[in-house]
Image 1: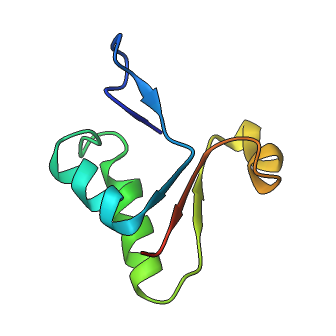
Image 2 (image 1 turned 135 degrees about the vertical axis):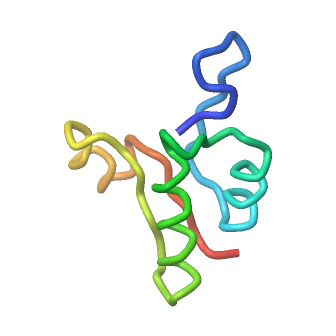
Length: 76
């Protein structure tokens, strides 16, 4: 995941909290036709007692489980 995706200002996110995810979603960083539904699902999961969410590509799943790829979303 990244803020300002596809621009010169792109900033990759390694770990964010639910509050940060909500803020970035509200700011339009994660459009509804792209990352938006994934972020909304992650927030819902964490607010229901989940401990963490990792968003990554299927190809990087193993690396993500080792903390070497993807974005981790954690409760506040």
